[in-house]
Image (tube, rainbow, N blue to C red; front, side, top):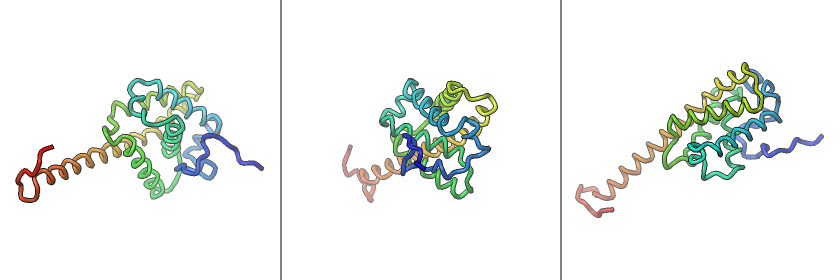
Length: 178
């Protein structure tokens, strides 16, 4: 028996596609693994064509974008214990933080992402009932992106505070100007 090969099989994947159970068998309801792959590819193509989102993801090559979106969608679909979900979520937050560390991911960008996900599902002929189910699960992505953006803001505040300490020194006297 040979293992199915695809661009989606990665040793660094957050969710093991073969060993995972998905909420409400959502991947099967989408049409199985091949249809899921088609959905992720369509979603990524839409991101690349979207004026707002292509700026957000411009640093990623196509394979990295596919891996990121696949992991994000599967993390929202996977049926795991809360502690395991928090671990997956924390890894995704860190990944997004590293990508968007300059500006975070504002709500209007999430809304564009969500719209493109919904449009991609329609493009790959997902039925309305399954589409609504996927939208509910995909809603978890918003909090991941929000927390990633919060992490960005907190680091910016910490960086600014550090620069101010260096500039004014421990005595409060101006040491140097940037």
